[in-house]
Structure formats: C-alpha cells, structure tokens
Length: 321
Image (cartoon, rainbow, N blue to C red; front, side, top):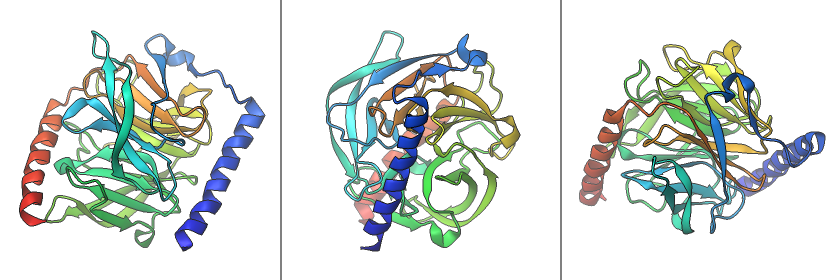
C-alpha cells in the first residue's frame, strides 16, 4: 500500500534525525529546566508505562476519569493503538506513577504527538506520516471519522493539534501543526450530526522551529507566563514556550527554551486536577515526564461542558448508529 511505503520512508528519516541528534550531544542527555524558569518549576521523570509498546505517541487523561491516562503506543505505524492505564496520585493530586499494566483502548493507526479531546467529548488523534486527523466518539474503539488534511493544504505531515481552552479569546479554536517543517495552522470548521468537526479550511499562521509535536496552552496565572503555549520540540530535544496572540497563535519572536536535554519530546497535556504539564517521549526510553509549578486550571466550565458533551453524544450515538 502506498501509505505503508511512504510511512516506512518517513519513519526511517525521523529515526535518523533522532539518531543524529543523539550522536552529536550524547544519548543520555541532561534534562533541565531553563534557569529563567527553574525557580518556579520542577520536573519528575515518571518512567515508562508497562504494556505500552515503543514508540510512544501523544497522551491525555480519559474524559470523565482523571485517574486514567490514554497513551499512544507503536506510534507512526499502521498497528498503532491507544492504551489506557490507571495513574497514581499523591496527597496533593500530582501524578507520581502508574498502577498495573496498560490495556488496549482503541485502534489508533499512525498516532503521533496530538492526542486530545475537543468540544462535545470527541477524541482527536493526529496521524503521521499519512497527514490525517482521526476522530473518536465517546466509547469508540476505532476511528469514527478520518480527515485527509493534505487535501486542505496541510504540509506533510500533520503531527499535533490543540484546542483553545475555556475563558480565552480563542476558546474552541482548532490549531494544527506539521512535523518536521513546523507549519502551524488555524482551522475553520463546522460540526457534523455527531459533534465531530468538518474542517472547511486551514490558514497557516506561523512556522515553528525544532520539529513541533505536542502542544498545550499554559494555565492562566502560572508564574512567568502570560497567555502562552508550550511546544514539545521533537527534533531539537526541547520544550519551548511562546506567547500567543488574541487568536491563540504563537508569536514566533517570543520563543524561549523552557526545558532542554530531551530525546524525542512528543505528546503533551495539562493535568486538569493540578495544572501540571506532562509529556511523552518517542524513543529516548519512552518516558512520561511531569513538570509541576503551573497554576491549577481556572476553567472548570470547560471540563463540565466536556462531561455533558460526552453524555449527550453517547446517547445520540446509541440512537443513530
């Protein structure tokens, strides 16, 4: 199949780029938070998740259950899947580990850095290198819709996405990015009858360096941050910060290194209970790393709406499918 051949070529290219980076700087890189931020933020390597095969893709908490983590495994391959595992939290609510081996949750071919929920409780998964976006209705174990982003003008290949969080000027705006060129897009869309998006058009608003993968918006009120985003830079081995404009698009000139010394920085999400930033690594030991110090998320209405959308869509799906 053309996709398999194309996927194999790009996978070899991607792993080669990672190998070159490791050869230049040493495989065991010293992870560190930039001195500008290190007085307010600290990180913890949570290790690997038993039962999830290499290489890791994106990750997020399961909708409606903040004690279960979804994590992509066998990323960038046709046999890729999302796995679910229980998380262990300390007395302050921070994730400190994982309980028991993960189990398969849903088929996720070519899963990559972007795994996140959007409006109406729909789960979205970026698909690299086939330049697609997969969508899952609540309870689905296979994609309910797959969008060909190449047909919309997205550069080869889409790798990550982020939704504008609640209580911001860009709430529910959909942003897409590509690896390795760093093209960053704002998407216009409508909803179909099931609450999934029909993307109408995309507009490139920025070009990011470092090979962007996972993307999150920083919780309001976090020390040293205004309205900002964090980006997992797979190619550069960094986490970068950007100020964003009123549309939620990164202002390229404001880039700062937040964390460096990483191998294969990949997915990203913000823990809804603590505001902690967590990211995965594609290779590099396939790790989950937690960064603490961010403000607790001040947008509870977003999560309430997510839960209501989840319940409503589950009911609609039973009636219509």
